[in-house]
Amino acid sequence: MSAGELADRATGSKFLTALATRPLPVGPSYTSIFTRFDELIHPQPRASTLAGASNIAVQDVCPLRPVEHFTILGDNVAFHLVLDALDHDGPAVRERISDNLCFTFSTPNLRSNTGSATNGLKFLLQVPQHFEDDSVGTEPELASYAR
Image 1 (cartoon, rainbow, N blue to C red):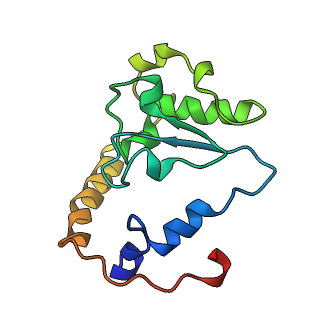
Image 2 (cartoon, rainbow, N blue to C red; image 1 turned 30 degrees about the horizontal axis):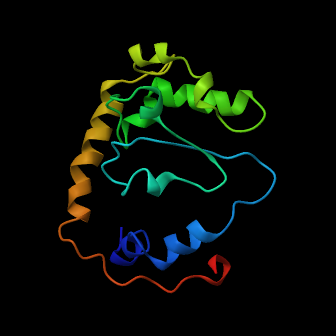
């Protein structure tokens, strides 16, 4: 990831400001599912909140659920929030999600193996190399379609 790519994702960047101020297109329903324990996307929940969307943190269902940026992909609560959004008209609704899911971990039929776990670990070990210092470089000009 280049310094410019990091700069346009920094808090307060022109890109993220334009993205946040532009209304969502009319038509579909929107659901933003996130985790309050995300170690890469900051600040939460503001970074994942979309105006006009149903914004649901995994921790809104299970307050102390230890789900973070990467593990949300295989989390059973997140999975059921996605299913709820797909199975109903409109966005996901937290109240339709059973609190009993707090006692489950991975999604149904999730398959993992040593190879996928090893690849994930290799990726995580490479991430800090991209963030060796606090500088993010210069933000590129905002594209005309984003204005």
